[in-house]
Image (cartoon, rainbow, N blue to C red):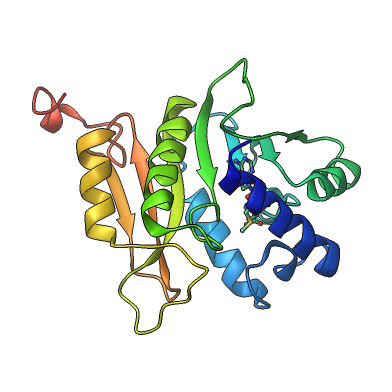
Length: 224
Ligand SMILES: C[S@@+](CC[C@H](N)C(=O)[O-])C[C@H]1O[C@@H](n2cnc3c(N)ncnc32)[C@H](O)[C@@H]1O
């Protein structure tokens, strides 16, 4: 396990020990509606035209809050969650025995399948005492790893630099710069949502064009 991952594991095991299965338990503040909005943004990666329950890997799933939210919304998912925090995975397995939760590190666990969608709500937001440049490299690794595991697309969030206050422990990244990096290194099929009222944004990266599945001829031949 890398030093950053180990720091995050220690940090989140402590927040969960202190606060249990709540937004504070995953260090997302006290406001449950904000966490719900983040889950909504993650699930927005799913293409409208999915005929069957899509398979979804939730990277850094915590206690499984995203799955609870999807079920509340009546969204059927073939869900798998993975997290390094032992106490959260234990809680998730105990309370949701019908879902698959893995205790593991996304950089080390060997999956025997890919997933339609891979999402990550919150690994690229907290940097603790790690430097910004080391976090940039960590982010590149995580995004590439998630993309390798997806058949259709991935979603993740990052703190925006368009703020008037910076907290030392959080990871901020200019959205235009990260968009450009994803565009040149990963895929041209990108959706950037910087329009919701939190100090962050969500990027969705796709293997193919989306949103107009029945009529894609206009894009044919134009891009690789
Ligand atoms: C901010 S919490 C978010 C939890 C959950 N996604 C939610 O929003 O309810 C980030 C989670 O990522 C987990 N994590 C950090 N690095 C990880 C890694 N390399 N592999 C798996 N999980 C990781 C932490 O243990 C922590 O539970």
